[in-house]
Image (cartoon, rainbow, N blue to C red; front, top):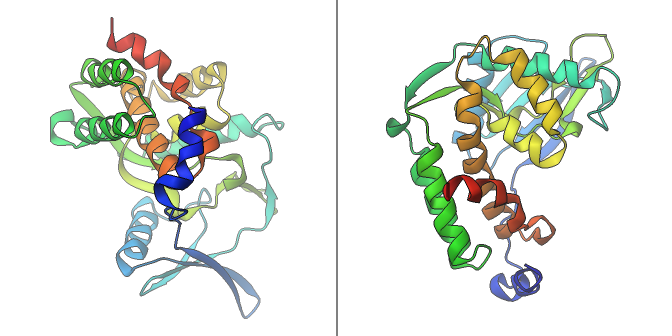
Length: 262
């Protein structure tokens, strides 16, 4: 893996993928607004539609307007989380995901989605560039086929739950997910949980979260290993392509390799 990291700069010559969206702020008659400037209008429309479909909620900033490639929302003043183990933080995050995952979820045949195909494409690329060796690639590809459920729960998910993307509003309302770009519709439920597990969610915290949501979304736990593997393959690929070599760690896939070779 160290060799991969050393070769990254030579491979891409520094031409990493970079986010092209920008944040700006504006105040309208005393109301502070955050302006999310997207690279294209279609991205802005997707965010607008996700916020509108979820509906007005203290869980997300209030939508003000979408104009061409910009989305304006009301700025949420308050305290940003800095650690998931801050008093009450996990309970609030669990409440947020419970609200998300139970807001009109739907179960569809996994064969009607591209989840399996995309995961295998990502794993193949990781093998081609040397992040995965031949044995790991074969075992993980087998794992995707072993773990894919017959039906997948899809719905709303907050797909970038790093702790800095949560704010405790100054007015005392419930925790707010301020990264509106990360509110997804018809996502495989568990994608946000998979991202949290990479950054801060422990196994014990994961159990608590699932125990709170599972009664409302039966089968969520059963699909989570597949969703987590899909996420990890895509996330690792994007870390490579964005030049963030410190995140490249084939050992993250080890639990899934065991499932592929069972």
